Structures are given as structure tokens and as C-alpha cells.
Image (cartoon, rainbow, N blue to C red; front, side, top):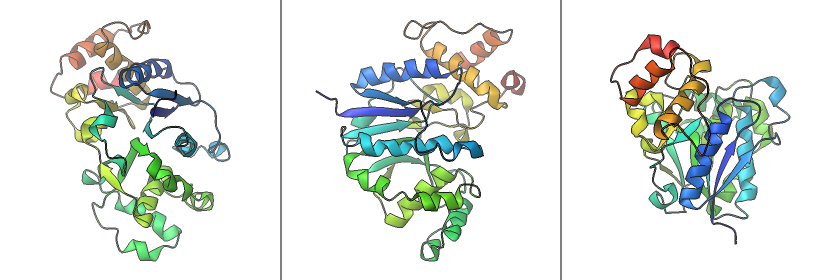
Length: 275
């Protein structure tokens, strides 16, 4: 008998953190009795990936429409997230399946300019009057869907996407927010502990969150170092093993970084972040 819940993530291409994150997601999926489904091949994004547009693989989230034929609810997670081993069951924390659940990052950053640009390009001037400074703008790194939101995916229009893909930053995330606004889908806000990003400050507090999202530079000053930090954090949680996996070879700064991160050192140390 199929499980009622699924976790969906996208891991296309090569990334040194994928195998560790996959093990982490498997641990959580087993804990909450959900299936883990990983997208590793392009489908909806294939026509656009050659453009090197940031976030194009995010279009594979559209596969969730098909998953909702088989599952009551689907949790969509970006692949640069790690889950605390003691994280509660998100499906139980947000039981009302009449709503989608996302973090409102508009409370922290003004993203109104992204929505305005999208709406202007799509010539939806009637909606424009509802866009104001610090307006609601949801982050799509963590989304909780249910069968009742199938209509959301049916409203996605690739002709509209093609109009904004080269001109709007975070085009896929912004397009989702445009759809939320235009069609007034029922959305409720996730607690930031289920989507903790560096925008919330206090990098030392991230290890207390349920889901840690290493978006952008991910608590570092160099994007190429964020994956090392993710792996460091995972092995901080899981002591030196993660479902039998061995930590990567330690570099000269590994032990020092681990000491400060594990002990929640309360200040930013740029030198450590650089390395």
C-alpha cells in the first residue's frame, strides 16, 4: 500500500553534497513514514537549461502534479537543505490540507520589485495595484502541497514563463508568487524554523532549526564553500557517521570550523567563512 506522503527534491547534475543530503532526506522520510522521490533528469527544464538561467531546474517541481495523483501530500525541498535529526513531522505540524505552506520572506526582504516586473511583463495591470513594499513573497525552498492544490500546477503557463525567464531574477519563484496572487490560492506561512536561511542572521542559531536552507552563499562568504559547510553540519548532527557514510577528507581548517560551528560560536568569523 502506497504511503500517503512523499518528499520530493531535485538533484540534477553533479554536486559533492548530493549523496550526503540524500542520506539525510532518507533518514527523515523513514522517520515520518514518507516516500523519498528524487528528480535526477531534466524534463520541464530541458528546453531552458542551455540558457544557464539561474534556478531553471526548479521547474521540475511541476512533476509534483503527477505525484499528487498518488499521494495525499507532498513536501518539496531544495537540495541545498539539511534536516535536523530531531526535526518534527512537518505534515503533523501543518495538518490542514486546504492550504499550501511556505515561508514568507517578504517579511524580511522587499521583493516587491520582482513581482512588479513580472506583472508588468505579463501585462496584468489589475494585479499591480495590490503589490506594495514588503508585500507577501514566498520562498519556494520548502513547500508543502496537498491534493487540493492540484489546480495550482494546472495554472502554470509556459508561454508566460518564457516571457520572464531572462528578465526576472528568481524567475520560477517569482512566477509562483505571481500565481499565488493572481488566483488567490490558499497559502499559510511556515515557521522560519522549517526554512532557516542566513537572512535571519545569527548563523550560530541555524543548528537549532528544523530545516536549514543554505540558499545563495549559505552562511558563508563563498558559494563554493557552502557545500563543505553543509557536510560539516551534517556530521556535527550525526557524530561521524550518516547512514554509514564517512566524512570527506578533512582539510587544514576543518577541525577549527567544526569547533566554532558545533559550539555555536556567537559571532561571525569572516576568515573561517572564507576557508
